[in-house]
Structures are given as C-alpha cells and as structure tokens.
Image 1: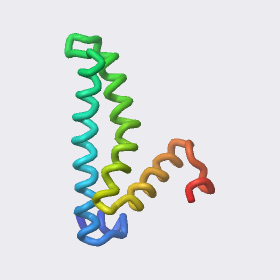
Image 2: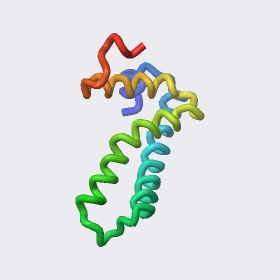
Image 3: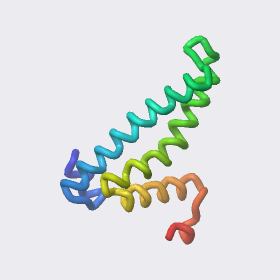
Length: 101
C-alpha cells in the first residue's frame, strides 16, 4: 500500500512519512478545533443535530483545507499540499487550470 502511494505521489520514503503525519495531525487538530468552537458557541449534545452537524461539517470541509496548509509548513511539505489543494479547487470548479501558478 505504501509503495503504491509513493509511486502515485512520486515521493521518497521520508516524504511519505511526513505527508502521512501531516494528514494525521490535521485530522486530529480539525476535530479538536471544531469541538472547541461548537462548545464556545454554546452548542451541546442537546442542541439540534442540524446545527451541530452544519458547523462541524463546515469546519471539517473548509477549516481542514486551511489547517492542512498550515500544518504542512513545519513538516516541510507545503509544496505537496499546495498542489493537493489546487487539485481539489480545480475539481470543485473554483480554480481554473491557468490560475494555479
């Protein structure tokens, strides 16, 4: 499995480890931050599910994209993740091929 990822992403063993660490730290950070924000806004388990789901969903979708770029910097993987983000933005139709330089 790791060999397939290395080949697909064209990265070294060390880069693969660092990339996986960025994904792990970002996922955990996003979950913790979204939990903190829902608490700060006064949303509790008794709050309507749609309110909690909307906030956490937005945080997980949009906040994750920002957090992953921030977390990638200390791991030295910003270039990889910036290209990853541009690919996502193109798929969503928010970035044209010529705008991604």
